[in-house]
Amino acid sequence: MILPIIGPQASGKGTQASRLAKHYGLFHFSSGDVLRDEVKSGSDLGKEVARIMNSGKLVSDELIYDIIKKICATHPEGILFDGCPRTLAQAERLVGELEIDLLIEISIPDETALKRVTSRFHCSQCARGYNTVSLPPRTAGICDDDEAPLVQRDDDMPEAVKKRLALYHRQTVPVIEFYRNLGVSIRTIDGEQSIDEVFEEIRLAIDSSRETGPSMTVRHPAPSKWRV
Image (cartoon, rainbow, N blue to C red; front, side):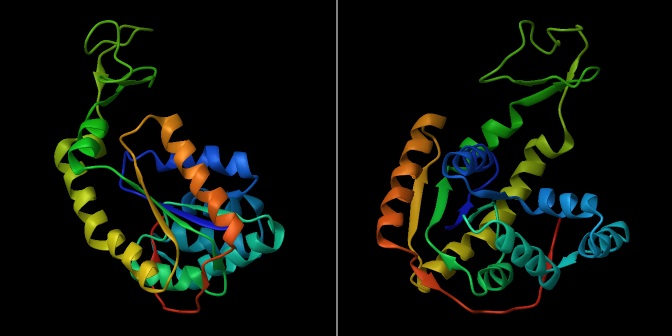
């Protein structure tokens, strides 16, 4: 089973990907984690990745594809691609000779993503995380454990979030249409539901897809770079 999950920040795709991978026994492919694991392995491929990352350059799609082929060989049960591909060029190179069973899009309004992300804070001393909406501290702005002030990451500031959302719409949303035009089955899930409701809806979509088989095999090599 080959299953990409795509969605904007704070859509919950990481949470769902982890849960779904465990439920179906799939390899959870998150590009950053996979590259770091390859480096830790000390393999020739990992050494090449480390050299590129340490030089501050972007890892090529060719190198990513080599890692994907290696993972496919060791995980025949299937792969769940978490948050990738992020661009059209990456989508073309990612698909290669893999059969995509289903593409899941977790959709939330920009306003919801902005609210969820900008509600995140962490303790300036112990780094414990809080969310002013879903997991607030007992005293506003103060850590429950050590009474140190809570702070916010630069990436969680409103302007930074807006820029990342704009990038998602410009670069990643077209990926969904790309796959749709190729005949790949796509299921859009309302990410404003509860975690359990989202999971159940995705599970039903996957189970239905498994009964009909993969939607299409596509071959579209295209050179580009992947950010880690």
